[in-house]
Length: 448
Image 1 (cartoon, rainbow, N blue to C red):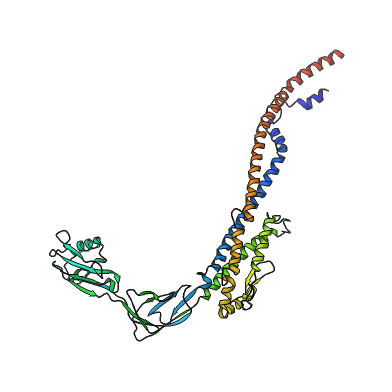
Image 2: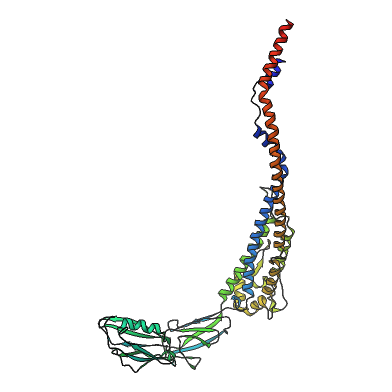
């Protein structure tokens, strides 16, 4: 009996209260760990849904670019046979055609300059002169002792904002006042009169309109940037060449069209690949994506595949993406057959445009854009509905975990109190055991 008590109570070290309580609480936290695992899964699902939504937003942009009647599908390009004489660009309103342009002279900017003075700060006689730009009202420029140097007069004229820019130029002869019209051509012609100052002013360049012909029609412009001579075409006159006709060719910008198609295909494939990844089973990890069981994602996938399979009647046989060289692959992604697409763009552009945009608000791009509007709605879109449901569940789990933690805090305090008392008792056992041993020893002596 003595040895039994010795083996149980001789150490007198008690118990590790905190470690014991932690072990008990770990076991009791089983339900909480399940909730935390659920939260981790929901976080993965939220991340995946947000990523796919982001990809969908990009797809919307690319589809709308195909739908836009002023966008790439109808883009035009203007080329000049003599880019050193004039350059040209076109917008979607331009008509495919070839024009002949001849540039007689460029629009010039009117200038006046003064006689040379020793320096910018050399004084000259006071007085005034009248300055007029085009048909604007004449302005009297007064010169007094406060501004009778070319540097100060230039500042004073600029402060008056009279349609010219005044500056000081210098050469070997000295410094001069230079007046440059802010407008080119005849509307910017500078006129100086009634000069009573000690500064002489001479015309440097007259403000002349550009003179040119378009398809034999004589035209002129106050600017060398011409945007009204050929509808939808902007020309920049660079140098006069009266004897050199320039050919301006307006054609469809098939490079821009091709890029818009490839941008769409890339955006579409990104979405489809992201969805496919969620439903792909990994044989190594033996898991699928976080959204493998998501019916809304399945529905979205089905919608997108149906949209890509859109078909119309007639249109000279160009009725679906496949007929245009945009081929559906086995995994639902698209691939551009460059040879076929180039042939369609080169020989059947109007049919191509009609397929995407239709003669009225119909066609592939309109149909796809409308469906995407529904699919990406922040209130009724399937992925947003999913996200909303997940958030509600996450909020509920967060509340449940917090409530559980509150209960565990109370439970921890109870256990610490309880096991602290047990520990205290255990730590008294050596003394108790000694007393018992002493009594047992006395009994043994009495027996002997």
